[in-house]
Image (cartoon, rainbow, N blue to C red; front, side, top):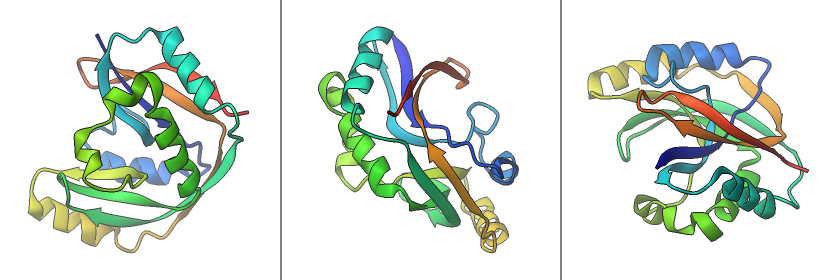
Length: 174
């Protein structure tokens, strides 16, 4: 069984700003690059070629699109997090998310996601206690940088036993 995740790895010119925030507040910063999750981690025996075929099929009519992210929001459902907000391209990302969770991935749709709407974002902070969370909220509230890029591909990663990200496939948008 492989543990996988499907995501977008945005290629921002000013990615270093996000990386500095994540190094300080996100325990996964050394395991996986900044990303927007499309399909949450799942364990399966799906063959690589079958997964690539499914993804290619459901995204075949999707062209590259622009995303713009700005502003950090504290979120405290399912844990204590800081999310970098998506200002432009959110509809495209939600569409990708919905398309991907069909066919061979339909059964991997997380039950906790059924309770609310999918809110695409980049996680820049994750906390175990309220005190650290409150400090981080205060330290990031004035960060107003804008992050722009064109999304040109969808990435499948394998998550190893150390939580490290190993890129398995990149599927281009047409």
